[in-house]
Image (tube, one colour):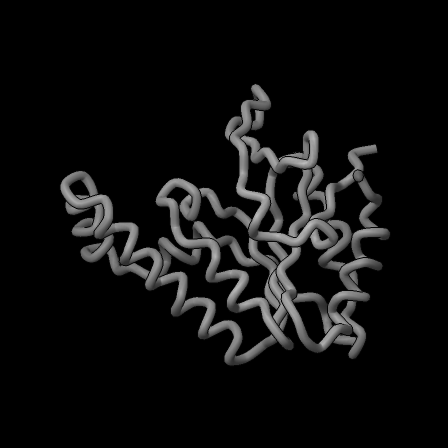
Length: 179
């Protein structure tokens, strides 16, 4: 079901008040609607305690920024011969990132996860981290068709791939209404 941004925020606010359980949420939409949602809505709203909503974190930038130039060059060279090595290194970087984030906050917003999908990183860790007082909101370019999530691969052609719905509970997935 497509929802207005304010309805998504109301649902999210209600979920942020729940102290225990799984707290992994997804907002789906076109690239442009997610950008507008981030700039026009999320940047303007406040949490219940009056603090600003956390700024969305670009996972792609975070993953790449964790490497010195020489280490990144070495990783790229090894990738062609040992792709599982690259995957394991990026998985460790992702684990360390989540550990760092949740040592200082209990709510993060993640966007730009293309490298996560390209390297088939373990997304189940998000479910483990988004428990009890920790909350994760993931912004995904995609849509729901026949109760199945499809992520956009190409924003110009609308080409998409099927996404594993097991990650998010059904009532924690919201799709932006583009109107």
